[in-house]
Amino acid sequence: MLYKVIDKSTYQDFIKSLISDYALIGPKKKDKAIHDFVPIKDFSELDTDYKKTTLPPAKKVLFPPNEELVKYELGDSVAIEPVIEAEEKILFGINAWDINGMNFLDRIFKTDFVDENYMAKREKIIVIGMDSEPSETNFALSMNTEYAEEGFDLYMTELADKYFIRVATAKGNELLDKYTDAKEAGEGDFKEYDKYLDEYRKKFSTDVKMKNFYDNFESVYDKDEFWAKIAKNCYSCGSCNLVCPTCFCFNVKDDMALDLKNGKKTREWDSCMIADYGLVAGDHNFRPNKENRLKQRYRCKLKTFKEKFDTYSCVGCGRCIDTCLAKINIAEDIDSVKKEVSI
Image 1 (spheres, one colour):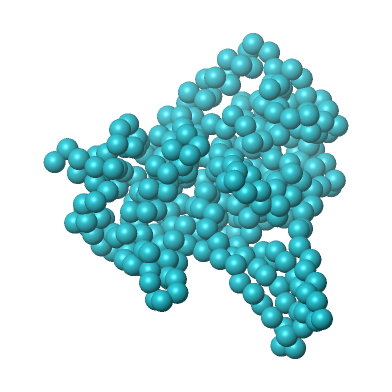
Image 2 (cartoon, helix red, strand yellow):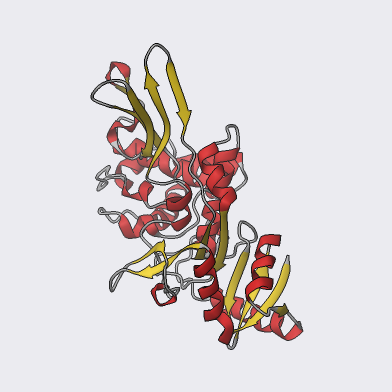
């Protein structure tokens, strides 16, 4: 890792150069309350002063909601052609917890089975991270995801009159050398950066106690009355899964042309919280009720991948809390598990 600084006065020219030479995806204010990561054509469109976006940017770019996988033709023989679309892009302004969410997806899509569609996009994308203010529902600090140690090419932190930049890759260093007069960070820069981090971490107002959760969860796993209470208001709409940076479930479907001579396979986001997700032949459902589905979701987020990867698959972004129509709050439910064990 290299550590460099650029003067704040050169920031705008740096971004303009990136927009000129690359397809740049960055945060744009859509209305008074909503930011979204979209193609940026002009510096004036870019707004990095955001607390949250509805959809996680890396997931939307690397694992699109709807994606063509294969196209085929039917005749005397079947001709099958994989569809892998990837182009070099810059993902700019993504914050630490969303980078950590992307790092989790990286492991999912290259462990056990390598997903060529995802990896082709991942290898082409240039990631430039930047700190953003946590929302009231954000508990990334409790999940140790408020700081990204990997998964980016550059990570920019705004200080008083400069940007402190962590340079993680040769590509990132190349961009700085080409478009800026970045200098090596000095002792004073590090002190200012450390002070910034101390103040930044104080801004996370939601504190979730994860100590002993791993064991506590098993203690309440078979308590049906507890899960019935937790899931009482759930609509089984799947919103929590769709906005989650680390949810990766999908469905694959065939779309045939009317002449039955050609078709395509596409995948689209799916949700384990939707009633039909566990439905199989014979009308059997492995997750027949909302209590079971919510329990399984929490196990996936907070236990399963702790066992597999030694990391939670929840980054504490708070999107599921903000999106849930039933006001189900994963942070509060983690505390409820602890209280249930102590009863």
